[in-house]
Image 1 (cartoon, rainbow, N blue to C red):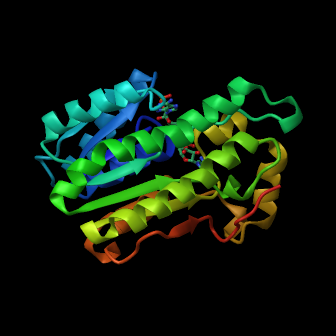
Image 2: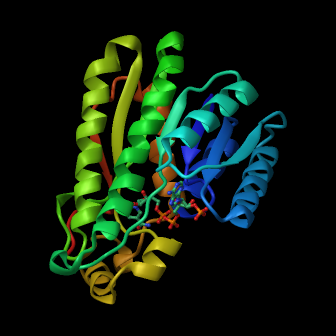
Image 3: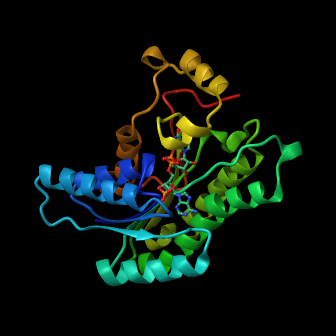
Length: 253
Ligand SMILES: NC(=O)c1ccc[n+]([C@@H]2O[C@H](COP(=O)([O-])OP(=O)(O)OC[C@H]3O[C@@H](n4cnc5c(N)ncnc54)[C@H](OP(=O)(O)O)[C@@H]3O)[C@@H](O)[C@H]2O)c1
């Protein structure tokens, strides 16, 4: 199959790119500023594909700020020229800019809404023509347990909750055309985002209450495997769902 993954240079997105390549899928993925990480992700995916015996797998990366609708259009055109088609769209690019609401700036609000909600809207809208023409598509949007609200994350929570509404609408509008749309909700995964910005109190809470051995974090393959299932034939009748990959802990402070 043909995958388009935003935010595939690092963390969860890089895990999804590598997992898909290992399964023999072609992958176009994006990064916004970290070209070195994008190159590392590409090489890891190519190595994984090769190791699994998939010699012809094509992996390409593209610079894209998902906030920029004109760049989304240009990159999508380029991807369709390079790959000729697209089937699985994974919106994984995301940022957080935490602050208590009383102190949250307009810029912090806009940056997070624009990246985590406007971006997926632009990307989905752009690829819908191709998916509709193929009468096949899998849209998978990466959310967060914070969609239910999280202290210091009014912007992030609002964006992720909005992503659920967007996804469920896609499921209803395009299910009849062979396109499914689902949300995957990660719990706590060890990535740059959580390493750099997650408050220690949340990490301690997770370790204490997550019903997994030693309150462990998720591994990116455990998230990527769920994306793989949703994209596969086995996942064809799952549409408009919110799937938690949280080890059983769905709530933080
Ligand atoms: N890690 C967790 O535990 C966790 C939990 C819940 C939800 N999530 C969600 O999972 C997704 C991935 O998170 P992560 O932890 O893997 O994050 P990460 O390690 O910080 O990686 C973020 C990725 O998004 C890209 N990106 C950031 N801003 C962008 C923009 N404006 N346009 C295009 N791409 C952009 C980055 O590109 P560069 O490399 O170029 O900077 C990078 O590839 C996010 O949507 C996040 O909200 C993560």
